[in-house]
Length: 399
Length: 225
Image (cartoon, rainbow over all chains, first blue to last red; front, top):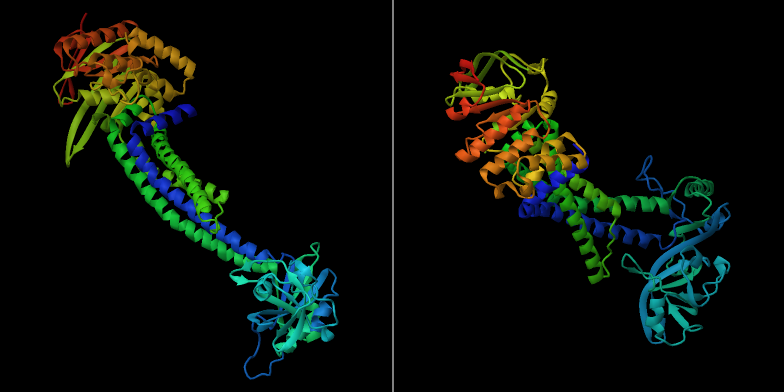
């Protein structure tokens, strides 16, 4: 039998009972549209979270004090963790491949300007912050490259904080009181937006040593290394680890590359996307049951036709394929309708609720369509086998 | 052309064995016109099904064109049916959603014949059976006689050597019935072997050979004309 005749005959059978075929395909359509819509939401969320984390750039390595994994005895042993220091940060900046080394501490303090006061996040950082964190300065300058232990009391304001304290008034050169000390405003940052609900603009940047003494800390919370894109994160990690081990005597720090972080995050988010997709998959299974039911009924109704096909010389294999083809046609049509429905809903939703992160991944769409066909195949196998194993004499008797 | 030797067919009805065919042996030569007659339950339909390779004998040998078809597997049987045998049924067995044209075309479609050749053959066949203006009609829009003519056109479209007809007039009025018999006799004159199961003595009497069956055995086998 020719392939196009095969498709024509299966299509004619499906078209013969339009309402029945429509309802059967609808089950699959609902399933597919649910999968497409839910994975679009999942994938949108995935991308949203990843972009939140990569807004600081991807060639960044963070070093935190303390070893992540536990080794040997613990408890009543005096901690030999040496804190990360500004000197460590300076030394790391000498490593080949490292462009900038950025010491960081973070805290919370009240900022007073004239009569206004606001509690805000305080970042104690070095002068290279705009480059390392991919921030840009809107007015004035960022913190100067003063000797760390002898820095001038300058402050740079995040855009939100600036608006809260100074409204539209000029702010460069104004004095601020932060944690009881006086600072002079020398710059204002561009808006960076939020990161997972944390407002990056509601912040003030101070010289690292000043912030350390304000919070009464002797060590850094983190050192961020910005490295050359030509170097791998791995080689930088190894070099930084070697240097710090030499300086500290043991591995009492943890190095996290952006890649590692994204990988962990990505795998979590992938599971989320797959989980919501599987939720839609349940309705797909229900659609499959619908096809199975209808095909079983169809085989019973068309027993005489099966007998006739045998008498006309159709092999059992061909009879099986014809019914299987019908089941797949139903699921394929349902799948296509579901695809249009699902993508349409996703686009509609994106238009109605622009804040919702929606991204239709064509990989998932293709997978959903493939699953639809597989569902049709799975649902059609048993009825098709029944049709093929019907003795022709028995089948012909049914009229 | 057809040689049957000691064909047996036993059905299980409940836990009772029913001998539908016992020790059936006969030959049919090419071009014969045979009527198989007998009361219902005599085994004539079972015999026709075995002749048409739709059923297998439990024992015995069936040779068609010197080929032992009783030993072929399903796929080969399908192939023999496709090319050598045409069926005509009491209830026509036309596919309701296909037009007369498509019903006649079906065996060619199943055999994978090219569409252009199919179109030509089916058009010719419909014209030959006086159905030219019925090509686009579905079976439900045709009279009984027309339906049976479509069925005969379908049975002959593959140019088989044998036509097996199971009560071809059983569902027709007498004028349509005799029209159908005329067609079958015309096909026989063209050299096709016709084997027909019938109740109707008048129709059976027109055949050149009558095989009478009773209780799964051949009661008599007579040639005349």
